[in-house]
Amino acid sequence: MLDYIWLDDKSPILSQLPNNFKSAAILLHPFVQMPLGWRQNKQIHQEEDDYPTEEEILKQGSPVLWKTVMKESGLKSFEELEIALLTSIYALKKKFARSDLAVKLNLNLNKDRYYPTEDKTSVFLINGLLKVLSSKGADKIYFSEPIFDNSGILKIKHVSSIDISGLSPVELIITDENMDYAFMSVYDSFNTLFLSKGEDVKEVVQKMNWEAIVCDDNTFINWYLRSKDEIEQGTL
Picture 1: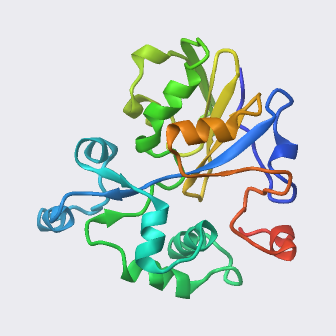
Picture 2: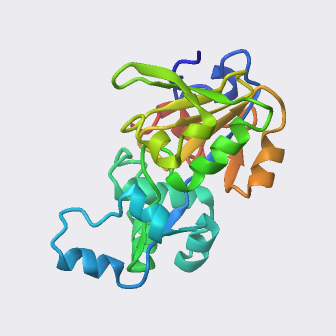
């Protein structure tokens, strides 16, 4: 069993991994594109929260790449886009917030396009995660979530994206029975951390067509901050 891993922002990600994991990547959650007029229809029906449910996202939505949003908004990097998102949800200290980037993002966001899933893994990614977890013959997954101190075992072939997403309101780690791979959601972010006990993270990311940042020895959990001083001071 693998418990949820609490990563600090004072040392690189790779140096904090359990001994059986050797490589990692930060998966970027896709933006959510709903059908034309979807938001307006929600508002007409006086929905308090017009963000689509996970069921609605899977049934009617489509994923939008960060690179597409960058091109449309004029943001220059994954780092700028992450900072724009975090600024918009007030997840950064004032000295790190970039209202100019947030304005760029929001002015150019399609009316029926929504931010990526925050805090928990995007349902757009979960089917792919399950494929990776079973790719070396595993038929069970272990999960651990720290909010309600809940953990357990599930049969891969018996679970859906909605089932996995419903295991925790925020933080969650899942791994296959052999702990070849693991995936961990990260609070106050739009990312999921992908771990491998081998050195094949980049290969898997490319095969699955995920947008991701492959971690090296200098990649921190707050990867979007550029300077050493910013990394050392933290963001929360």
